[in-house]
Length: 360
Ligand SMILES: C[S@@+](CC[C@H](N)C(=O)[O-])C[C@H]1O[C@@H](n2cnc3c(N)ncnc32)[C@H](O)[C@@H]1O
Image (cartoon, rainbow, N blue to C red; front, side, top):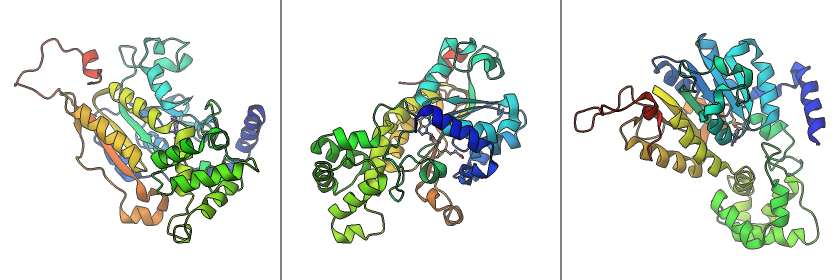
């Protein structure tokens, strides 16, 4: 759908609350996120890097009347819908439509306080007394929302007969169908293996290349069919739909999910104020590995500590209530109130700015 039509469609949907079905997204590990928020001494600024339907943000804005929030999402539709849904919080919430790595870099830049900065005229509401962004709580809830899967019409789900697009933002250079049309068999196999950890990546790539000789593969359901026909019957009728991993791989590639997550998490840690926390909920091992490594690296320095050694997972009760939460892993890093003493003495020349720098 052309961008202008899409914007009109969003506006039309927003006039009809029945269309706000994306609020069906149930925020994952909300109890754990609430408990973390309660553990921060002065909860002043939340940066929700994956605003989505706004579930986590809403819960925290509701509980903490003094809290302000910068909510980021790459998907303009998610931003429009959550802005409308959370409009009752007025100036306490700034919604930023951007990739999180780019938004966090802009929030860390000296230009942030100007009206040309990413927060525009509202910047003063969100800056600390030094005119900088210093966050008490930074949250990443990676992946996609229920709305994107079931209602966005962008082919994220292999069960839907929708255009094979998968872009969170129209800024992304290639759609999933572009990748399917342009990549060589070897590139497709590597992509499906690396980002999908799919053991039948070569067969699937071969089948895609054979099919595209006679047709343009531009519908999600058609791609799912080609994949299902290419794998052994035992796998085809197994517990997981045979297209699950290939669809995950395409989505990661289209949106550069791993590269953006790595850059963003590193920037986020640099924006934490003392006692502030950065929490990341990931949904597959590729993401979790990145979070684990960055946090372990940071926690080797004096300024940050891991909240727990092992990630937390949803309770059985939550998984029963909300099955998409089943693969979630929550890792948390905290900026120490005082840097850990090494050799028993705090360095005399440390400043607040240095405290916020990222260890490398
Ligand atoms: C799982 S949903 C978040 C749901 C949200 N926590 C809630 O409770 O409603 C993830 C959101 O992150 C967004 N997203 C994914 N990758 C992104 C990126 N690189 N930059 C910004 N937003 C991104 C998606 O568009 C999606 O809306």
